[in-house]
Structures are given as structure tokens and as C-alpha cells.
Image (tube, helix red, strand yellow):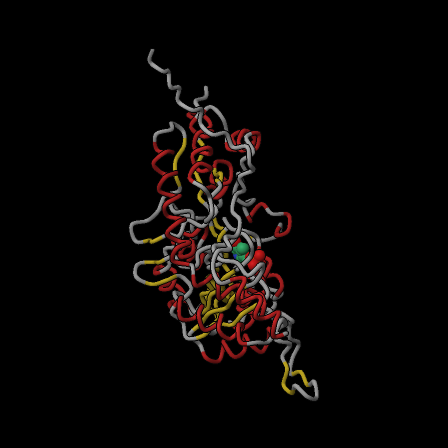
Length: 396
Ligand SMILES: *Cc1c(COP(=O)(O)O)cnc(C)c1O
């Protein structure tokens, strides 16, 4: 009698599948243990210098200055770039809130700019704002509505995809503005043939636990500008003029990264190529699966971009899919799978209620439709398949 072999049921996601968690698989233990063994655990030490050097070399900038978080890095970068109280800074409207908050820490004001087909700051809206809403008086660009000086543009490379930045750099040159890149979500991503972080005048990275590489928490400022790098180091380390006599030249900040965190960072950065490779493999599998599901579309990527797919994100068209993004999120949660919508549009944030904005409809639509899916570097193939199984299930 022929034996009946039944196909095993697909493995259910019995174990919780988180959105995006750290992957610790290299020299982390060894380097951190060395800090513990030698007592070099605090805010100076060879790992801080080494992590700074490694990051600068990786990104392709002359300098890197470590900071305690990506948000602190952004604050310090805005300060060294000359952003002053009552200045205005153009910020992408589709972003985690940190860059807008950092602008406020300086006493300056964000102006939100809607995003383009690739979900990144739309340079056409930047041009329109500068041309029609501003006027130049004695070499200073002034927002006609608020009377404030416009000082900088802060594009955010979201979700591992670069901003179309060349037209923004051109506008910045034309209007004498500084470009500060928020590259916190896109370490390793390439715009044309340049890595993000060396595209503008100064840039920031984050090593928070959910980012591509982590130090537990941490950040980095990168720039080619010698003076700005020195100033960033000075401001992030309490603005000390005399270490013995405790003389401080200005109001500085304790924004230092510890040696232990930097040790973790060195070990993580050693593995970044593998991490990116893994992210791309996950993204490719999702993309293939999602394309065959009516009502779901993958995040688009530009021909000129080499994204790192930090958080893999899809759009859910309720009419075609039979369920909206939040309902799909809840259904994934019932299956022990974590998914998350994108951030509240910054032009709708109660924290920035008085800010001006240019457009916002695209950000609003993406906020309604987008859902980020599990994409940790350590995501197991069977876990990936259980997510795909849930999102592929028919509705109607
Ligand atoms: C993560 C992130 C930051 C900074 O994060 P920290 O948690 O302060 O390190 C800044 N901007 C964006 C867009 C981010 O996603």
C-alpha cells in the first residue's frame, strides 16, 4: 500500500517576529570585554577614535565625530552649520520627528516639505518655496511670511533610500544655504556613485537599536569641513577649553558616546556589508511576493539609487486589498508578527503645530497606506515566509 505523505502545514509563527532588532554576531563580545577588562568603559578611549575613523572611511568623509544619539548628532550639526535662533530650516515632512525637534533645540523653526515618488524630500517644492515664498535682502534669504532668515535644508534619507539630492544641492548653492543630511536611516545607501552622508555639507547617523548597525544607542556627525568637525567635537564634549582648570568657552553639551558603545559600533561596522546584503535579500523576497498580491505595492526605488532597505515597507490599497494598513497590522499582530505604520506626518504633529509647510498630501497618503514589515538582519527564512503567508491571504 502506498504511503500517503501529506505536505506539512506551513510553520506557524509561534515565536514573536519583531519589526527590526539588532544582530550581534561578530567581535562585539571581544571588544566590549576588552573595555571591561581594561576599565576603559567611559567617554574616552581608543574605540571612540577607532569608531570615528572607521565611519569616516566607510562613508568617505574626512571627519567623523561620535555622539550619544542620532538626535544629539543632528542638534550639534545644526549648531556648527550656523543655524541660529529664529532661523528656518527646510525639513522633509515624512520622517521620524528627531530632525524637526533638533531644529527647535536650536531655537530655529522647521518648514516642512512634502515628498516625491520615492517618498523623499521633493526638490521641486524646495525650489518653489525658495522662489516664490522668500526674498533676498542684503545677501540674506528671508521667508516673506514670517520675516525669518532661511538658513539650511535638512533632507532625510528615509527607510534606507537616498533623497534625489543633486537638485537640492544646486538650489542650496544658488541661495547660499547649508545642506544637513539626516542619513540616520540610510548608512551605506548610495546616491548615484556617492554614499549618503557625504552628499551635503554635514550629515548625521544613528546607531539606535533598530537601525542598520547599533551601539545600543549612539550617533555620528560626518563632514569634510575641518573647522566644523573640530567645533562638533568641542560642543559635544562640554566645550572644554582647559581640562585641568575646567574652563568652558561656551555652553557645551554632554553628547559623548562611551568607549563601550563605540566598541560595539566597531564590531557592528565590520559586518555592515553582510548586513546590507541580508537586507537586500529580504527586500527582494518581499518584493517578489508582494507584486503578486492585488492591492499591495512595494516601496519604489529609483534607478539612480542603491538602497539598503532599512525598514522594508509596503503600501496597502484598501479598495483593492480589502483591508487597510492598520487592519493588516492588527491581523499580523494576531499572528505574533510586528508591523508598524510610518510616522505621523510632521505637518500634523502637535509638537510642531505652528510650522509652515509646503504641500503634504503625498505624506498624508503614504501615512495612511504604508506598513513596515519585519526585516531584522537575523530574520530566518521561515519567519519571512510566515509574514508573507499572512499578507498574501486573500480578502474581500
Ligand atoms: C532614528 C532617527 C534619528 C535619530 O535617532 P536616535 O534615536 O536619536 O539615535 C533621526 N532621524 C531619523 C529620521 C531617524 O529615523
